[in-house]
Length: 270
Length: 116
Image (cartoon, rainbow over all chains, first blue to last red; front, side):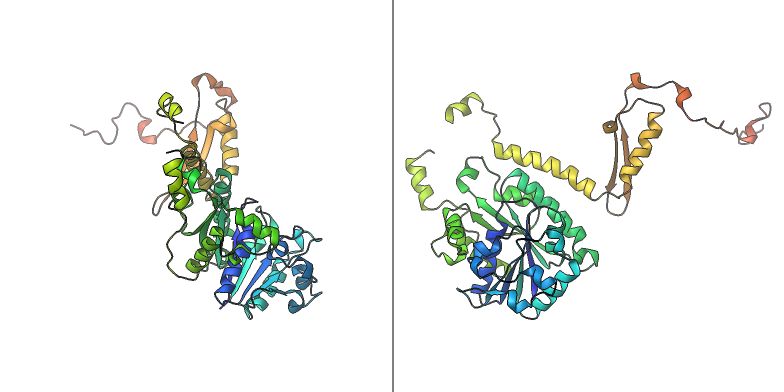
């Protein structure tokens, strides 16, 4: 049975789209048939991050409205045969996401894919609620920063009360914490909330910690999800998170000082 | 950094402050998130009634529902200052409390007094 995963956060700019692209690509690299859907109607960006912006013809709203067929709108990734991108409309507004239409499209996708990754817009308005409504699992993308943690807590509350699973008294949506833009150095200096702090405050299981990394901007500059960059620590951290998501045990990397930090501890400040 | 530590040995770092602030604000927000929907209306009605007797501000009356294992507790906190009491005639008319019939006749002892 296909699984619907939503990447959500409440707050904007924390790395939802980057993470949706990386996790969908990571699942595809593991041989899972995966589609990643952009729910951010009017502010289309997943296509840019996935590097397929020039191949968009039809979009999610066209399919919901019956103006195009699913296979006309899905864009097959050039790097991986298991991966498809489902872009959204850049001209319509979020009200165009009709819940019954979204449900119909998701049901059709479930017949063809193992994982349906939904990239939610920021906020807690119609678009964000529609993106999380049908989720089986939710990945809460959070930065180690007060406003992001607070908004994540709010979204966790909404998942527990307003999702389809909550409304139909089904097994609750599985929530996972993905901590992004993490800087071990700043945590050590006491300038940033640590992964333990955020876990304790939100009390949901940790899926992964993505270190702040220059390679993330490089990846979006070139339209290549960061997991395709073998040199990138962020890419490796996303691959670990994907492995944990499918049930593998992986140790948390990048939470211990690496070589550079040892160098710094010898020659830099204590 | 070291010099600052010497000057302010008890200085809390900003991550600790962030964590403490988040814990407090989220405890409050989670409590109001789980609260029944009628609470704001109840609070408004209570403000009106209590306000007849005492000068009261919106933020000095708090209504919460607490939960333990199998019981819910409706908790109403009203902060008042004696100087803010209003004259009693602001109040709605109060029905005189009925006096128990057995006590009307003050000459005879109450029924529970043993006759010797």
